Image 1 (cartoon, helix red, strand yellow):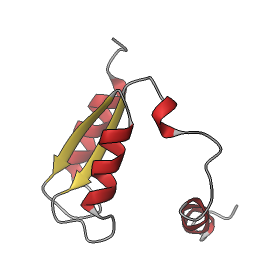
Image 2 (tube, rainbow, N blue to C red; image 1 turned 135 degrees about the vertical axis):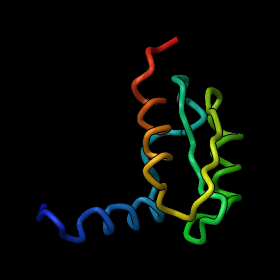
Image 3 (cartoon, rainbow, N blue to C red; image 1 turned 90 degrees about the horizontal axis):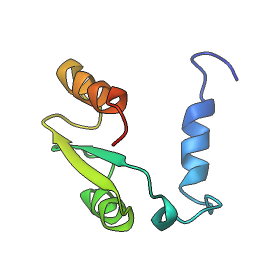
Length: 85
């Protein structure tokens, strides 16, 4: 992997076309799904599918597009750092 390279983009694109090796409906731990209100890269229908398919999912929306802003990242990091329930 090269820092600043395209490896991450390639991996993401491959993940869109192949089986992930597990069924997302089997994930039982808390999951947070974040979506920008004006995201033009990820269809809202995909966010809806994830929320419907993940038993412990919590949906969150931030006001921007695909990339969250600074305050949105703080909300995401706060969610990640919270103790498990």
